[in-house]
Image 1 (cartoon, rainbow, N blue to C red):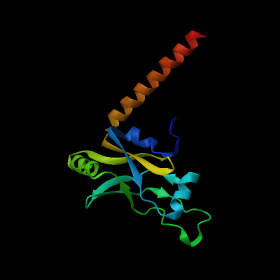
Image 2 (image 1 turned 120 degrees about the horizontal axis):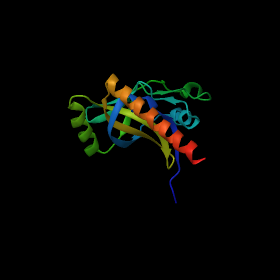
Image 3 (image 1 turned 180 degrees about the horizontal axis):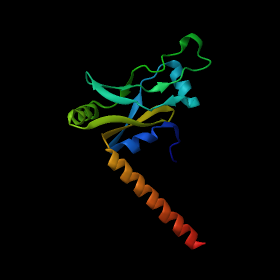
Image 4 (image 1 turned 90 degrees about the vertical axis):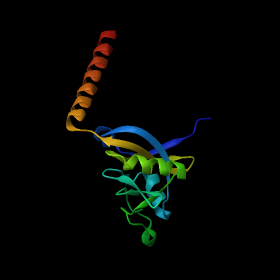
Length: 153
């Protein structure tokens, strides 16, 4: 039986702005109404990043909107949230992020077996000419696909 994975939100701009070298699955430490907001799909990963501090990984600037029925138990939307990874993975990421040009970028949030997970990427930034080349390659590929589709009709 296949696992049911429900995607909450994606950081599509990350694949445009960064070269993705490796991805990790991390749990997210959430407070009460944050889970309900995520289930409704009220999250945004734009401009968010992760960093290693004191042997733990935290995600910064991830926006989870307050839950509408949450009254006084709501949370701060942009608070720092701890990510749950194995110690070995944290040490590996700590070493990699100390290298020049590497950063930790969240790619998407999803639910897997009822638990909120975050796909974290070890990435390095693209230059403008890399972004232009990727867009050119993508449009050329799309044109070829379109031509093949029309030819087969």
